[in-house]
Each structure stands twice: as structure tokens, then as C-alpha cells.
Image (cartoon, rainbow, N blue to C red; front, side, top):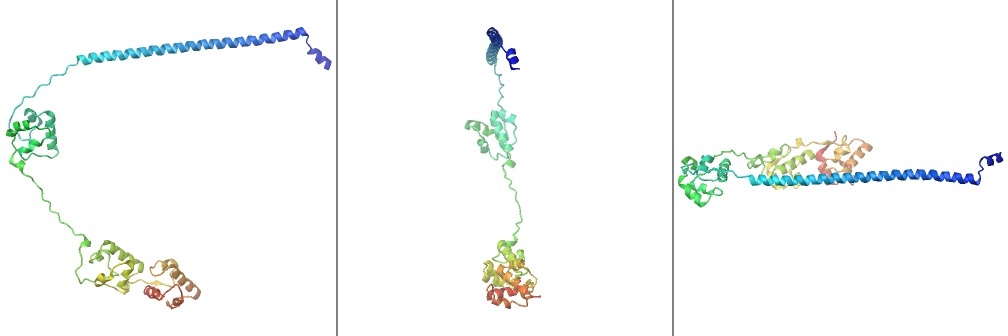
Length: 311
């Protein structure tokens, strides 16, 4: 089998030379075809470039020619233009009222159009000539023009009067400026902001401050509590009385920590001590057990006593 394979693929020296020549010829043919094709494409590209350049050059020349033609036509149009002759308006001096005269009257008086426009604009804005000298104030009016026209200016008497409307407005005095007379007594636990503002020395801000603090407390039990919000009780003492039946009390046997601590006289630790005591030892009947607690001072218990109950 091996000998058969060698015999089949065995070539003589002459046959080998012929095969190589054949391969070389095939390569040369393919290479020549490629070079010829490339050369033709190059020639076509160069022709296209030349054609594009020629077209661009032609368009540029046509554009320049059109510009020159427009310039020439513009020059012809400019040189052939002649301004129209404006007819002059005859000057007719006659008596006139500058408050009612129209534009034609002013033009016949010899005033130019722009000055006539200024006069009409002045009148449209509410301006009025009340005396002859007022006409002199028109923008652009010269001394010579005014001296010529002043003898013909006629302003009727009704135009010389200034009508100043009289407005009768009843001024309403704000509530905070209406004050109570000395001797007036208000219940500090009932008075609203409107009544409080009528007390001398109390404005809107202080009135709102008093009412807001009263709501947080549940009511005042003495006027000196106004010192808590930095008010001078000496000046206010004569204006207020206190009804203790309007003081709202907190039930210590049912109220939680959050409600207790919201009161201005009870802090968080005091509220916690009250609730924990209630859980451990049952219902409260007084504040005496808390006299031994470090969270409470004697002054604290005295202040709180006005706002608590045990029912």
C-alpha cells in the first residue's frame, strides 16, 4: 500500500518543473487582473474628482455673477430714486385753546408734527394747560415760537380751576387701641385675646401668650403665675380677678405619663414616679407620699396640688 501511494504521488523532475510553472502562471494571471481593476477604479475616481471640481467652479462663477448683477440693479434703483416733494402746510394764526385744539389746528399754527404729538401725548396723560405760560413748557418749544403764539392762546376760566376731590373716610380704630377705663376688672381665666388687648399695656402678642399659657396650665390660681411668662404682675394686678372654679384638674389615678409631663409644673421624671407608684401601691389619695421622693421639692408639690385630683 505504501508503494502504491509513492507511485501515485511520485513526479519526475520535468513534471515538477511543469507544475511549478503552472502555479506561477496562475498567480501572475490573478495578480494582473487585480492590478488592472485597481487602475481602472483609480482612473474613474480621478475623473469623478475632476468633474466635481468643474461643477463647483461653475457654481462659484454663477454666484459671483449674480452678486454683481444685484449690485448693479441696486445702484440703478438708488440713482433713479427721487424723494417726493412734501406739500407745506400754510400757517394760519388764530385764537386757540391748547386743551381742546386738534392736531390740524396745531399744524396750521406752524408747529411741527413731532411737537404736535408731544402736546397730544401730554393731554392724553391727564396734563392740562391752566395758564398761558404752561404752553411754554412743551418739550421742544422755543422762545420765538412761544412769543409768536402766546397772544393767540385762549384758556377758558373753567380750565384754570383745580378740582380737588374731598374724600371723607371714617377711620376705624383697631380693637387693640380701644382700652378699658381704670377700675375695669376681668376674670383672668375667662378673658379672651380681644378682651385682654383692651387692658393698658397688653397688645396682641402678650394676649396670645397669656391665653396659650392658661390653656397649658388648665387655668390660673393666682395672678403671680404671670411671672412664669415674664410679665410684670404689679401693673396687671389691678385689672384681673381669678375664679378658681375654672381651673381644670388632672386625675392622678388615671392619667398617663405623656399627659402628666405636658403640664408646665410636672416634668418627665415626676410623671414617671407618679405612674410607677400607682402601679406598685395602687390608687393615690394625696401627694404626701411624694414628699420623700428626690424628684419633688416642697415648692413643686405646692404648685402641683392646685392642678391634680384623685377621684
